[in-house]
Length: 98
Image 1 (cartoon, one colour):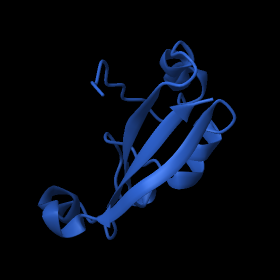
Image 2 (image 1 turned 60 degrees about the horizontal axis):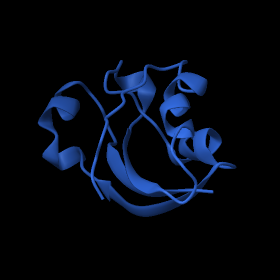
Image 3 (image 1 turned 180 degrees about the vertical axis):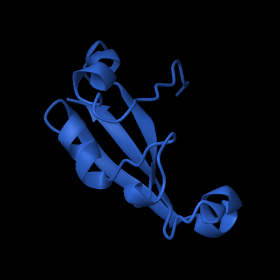
C-alpha cells in the first residue's frame, strides 16, 4: 500500500469536502486513517480533534471502518500538555471501500 495524498480538514467542513477525495477511489481499495482526539474545548486546532463517532459518521455506508489501534499519547506530546490538554489519543482505522 502506498500513500498518495494527505488531507487535513478544518472543523465544520468535514462532510463532503473531506470525503470527496475518497469518493473517487474504486470499490475494493483500502487505506489507513490516523486521527487525534482530545477535549476540543481545551485547545483550538489545528490539529483538530476527530473522535470515533465522527469517523463513522463520515465514512460508514461507503466504507467499512475498522479501528485497529488506539493509544494514549499525552505523555509523548509536551506541547499539548503545556497548552492544558488533559487527554490525547491517536487512533488508526482501516478503511475498505464497499
